Image 1 (tube, helix red, strand yellow):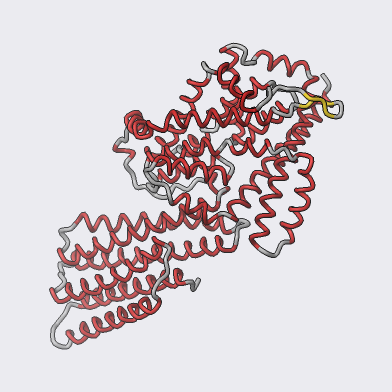
Image 2: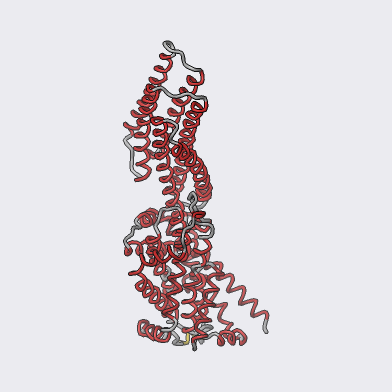
Length: 560
């Protein structure tokens, strides 16, 4: 065995694969930076309409060039309650079609121009002043790196045709019979599960096929199996997640497994469709500069991959709701699974900053809604007394939850901000960081008011009707004010600055008026010192809530 030849093959293939993967990362990053807003709108557009969900899944996967990232995103969104299982299955079906776009990129075959493309757009990326042009250059540089990496892999695979031991290995697993077909599919699934990138594994197969190391039939069988292997990423992401998130990951695997079940028995007939669509036999050999080439191999594999996924999506499309019901029965929710759902960001999603920012925005919205719930529980306790034990527990539980949520959001947003992102996305991430901090502080003050009320209870003291009415009045005013500001966060809309500052001042005046009334009453009636101090502290907490609400409003106005 020629070890120097094997060393050369290893260096070319591993180096080419590394450049290929780096190119995918740059191209994906450039696309997300340029089309970030549109991508986020697509994610937000997911509904129970199956066609819409499929369109979203296809578009997101085609843009970020990673079905694995899309599946992790889906699992994460289902886990946090942002997406239902039915919606998730629709997005997964769309992602299955979107992942075929990578193969069609290879069909462009601009390998001869790959290095000049990398050079020109790499220099433009480094020195561009205009931010949008900078990220367009980054995207095109990544595209060039993909093809340059592919060329290196092709040149690395070429000598394998002379390695008899390697060829004998693949002869044993050729899909000439059903056992060999299953073996090819399982090998493809194993490779993708190992590499954790269907784009990389499909690229490897295409590179080997384009040099004649693999024949067309074996290449397609491997790619069919790789469709199943790519589900391992979502399965890993679902570990430790909610039951519904596990169901979404299992749905992804089930869809791919069913696809293999129906396509493998029909594999010989399936292969006959491809030459008709390509216009040539994908295995056609042509001589170019004395070297055998397979000019239709990329196109043939891309068509086979696309047809399989489209047919598989059409097969599952009418049964999305039924699949969701089946998974709910197969993966039941037990009482021990019903736990507080904090954010479930996944480190794999850090490669898609736009998705992290969108999920973070939704988590911020959830924080705002939780605070509104805390306001309502606090009002119930003030008006009805301490018999409302459920509301008391709810306030403290939500305050603890929001502490964790704020920490998790901050960890991921700080990680995102350190990346090479467009200025607008960095500003938005910073704004979300500030809003989460303000919301968490508001929850602390609501919990603090509840503690002060409980302190009165523990000392056998009750608020007078006058004090109850006063606290209820300023609380309702604060709730209305916070709800107005929170709606601007939810719908990402502007605020009436005149109202924000005028109402903020009005609440401050209201606080001062209540404080003066309280002090004036002390002149005419004897009040326990604990009641005097506690009531003043409650009013001060309300004022601090007002201050933090104003801070959120300033973030939305643009004073960041």
